Structures are given as structure tokens and as C-alpha cells.
Amino acid sequence: MSQHARSHSHATPQEAAGPPQPSAANIKRWRQYLADERAEAAVYRDLAQNRQGEERDILLALAEAEGRHEAHWLALLGDHAGKPKRASARSRFLGFLARHFGSVFVLALAQRAEGRSPYAKDPNATEAMAADEQIHEEVVRGLATRGRNRLAGTFRAAVFGANDGLVSNLSLVMGMAASGVASSVVLLSGIAGLLAGAMSMGAGEFISVRSQRELLAATRPTQITLAAAPKLDLEHNELLLVYLARGMSREAAEHRVAERMGLLSCDCDPSLSLQPDLPEEEDQHEAVGTAWGAALSSFCFFASGAIVPILPFLFGLTGVTALVVAGVLVGTALLATGAAVGLLSGTSPLTRGLRQLAIGLGAAAITYLLGLLFGTAVG
Image (cartoon, rainbow, N blue to C red; front, side, top):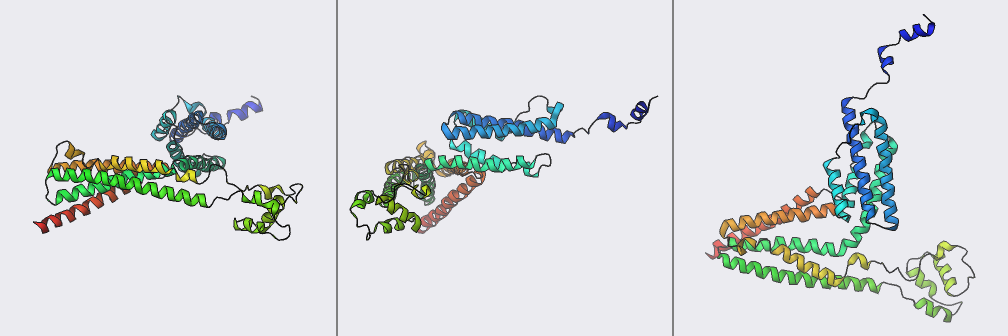
């Protein structure tokens, strides 16, 4: 027997079997990671189909990064990859929303998902992968912020109006019912509260937004410096004060004055000439929203919220039965609006929903007790 054959014959069973095989727990976890990475990449590709330009490129780059993570888990699994495993319920839900809606809510959910990545604590994930997920959260946050800014004005009015309608009219109905008046009086009170509240909300929101837009408009710089600069005294003029008052550094202000006075034949330091006299068309007004849009949203959403507590009375229910049904309907609506705010803000929908529910039903309960006291006192 040769020396080579003798040495081979003394190989241990572990050496003959090759490298250690991954445990069943590791295989299960890696396959889940693999499925989720594929699902997340698909979400970003689906979102990219509804975007153009820079946003589309960013989303496709995120999908490509998820593809690198997918390759990592495939390499670890090897022959154990098997048939494609279903992604988690959260990832599948995200994919459904991305394919059918592609809204800012999907980005907000994706932001939350990236922020909860387990890679930082998983010994089989590389440091680069964990860092990728952290960066992805910030990238998605930036994309979601663009959509949040576009929704901010009208969405704020809509959510505020709906919740105000739900809580105020439920409180009114509960208080009137507890005082012992007839169900018809409760219904009429609820309708009156709906109309009065909706008109008040719409008018208040219109005045609020219009006033805010006028305030912003008053702060916009004018082009007076362009017209007046050629006529100013070269040695004694207040043009420098204009730019200092707008918040420029003295160096930048002096540079701008020289430009306006025609004293610079070229820009020696272009960075000092980057800020225009006038803001871009898309200014703070976009975040505020239009006055009519905000007013209409407040009116409609207050009315849609305020009609919920009186629905049982409209359908002929009376007494405790009507109040219980009204409470359940309003509670469901409060959970939904709270969850929507949670989704949009990238926080827990359940926590925000329960908070809305506690505040709304708490206010209604207090009003009901006051109605009982009032009814007892009158009786």
C-alpha cells in the first residue's frame, strides 16, 4: 500500500464527509431570509414601475441590493435551497399593495420593515448586509417623505376632520341619550351636530390655510433688487443689508451685491451664487395645501365621521342597543384612522389605532356620565 493510500485510509469520518452541514434551524431561517429578500426586491421593482426619473432609479438600485442579499443566502444554503419558500405575511402584503396601489403607504411600510431587519443580530449575515438594511431604511424614509409632503396639507385636514366628527358626534349622541330624551331627539341632535360641525370645520380650515399661505407669501423675496441695483450709488447703498437680512453670510452677501451691481465679470466662487433671489415654484405652499382643498376635505371627512354615530338611529334602533352599535362602529372607524396615521408615519399601526380608540371612547364615556348627571338633575 502506498504512503498516499495509507494516509487516505486513516482520514476521519468528518474529513471524509466534507464541511459541517448546516443545522435544520439554520436552513429554515436562511430559507425564510431568502424568500423575504426576493419579495422585498419585487416590491421595489413594482414600485419603480409607477415612478419616473430619479425615484425609479433609486427603487431599482434598492432591488439590486436585495438581490445581493439573496445571493448570500443562496450561497449558504447550497443544495438546501429547495423550492422557493413563501415570504412572510408582511412581505406578501407589501407586495400586494405595491402591485395594486404603489402609494406612500407602501413606502412607509417598507421603511418600517427595513428598520426591523434582523441582520444586525444574526451571525450568518455579514456586517455589510446589516449596514445595507440601515441605509435602505434612510433611503426609503427619504422617498416616503416626498409623498408625505405632498399629502401633508389635505391628509392632515382629512384625518383631523374624520376623527373630530367621530368623537364629537358620538359624545353628543351619548350625552343626549343618557339624559333620557327620546330617540328622535337624539337623531335630530346628531344631524344638527353633523351639519354644524362640518360647516365649522370647513370654514375654520379654509381660514387657517388661507392665512398660512398669505403669511408665507409675505415672506417671499421680490425682484426689486434686479430693478433697483443699476440705479444705486456704488459706494453708499443698502443692497448688502437686503441679503444679510435674508440670512446670507457677509461673504455671500457681498458677492451677490457685486453681481447685482455689475462689478463681477465672472464668478470666481460659484458656490456663492447658488441661491436665487426667488424661491423655486415648489415652495412651502405645497406642504400647506390649498385653502379650498383643505376646507372641502375637512367638511367631507367631518361629515363622514359624524354620520357614523347616528347610523343606528337612522336605521330605527333605539335605546341601549343603538348606543352599543354606535360605539362599535365608531371604535372600528377610530382604529382604522389611527392605523392609517401609523402607516403613513412609519410607526406601529396598532399602537396608533389603540390610542385613537382610547381617546375617542374616553371622551364619549365622560360625556355619557355628564348626560346621566344632567338627566338626573333635571328629573
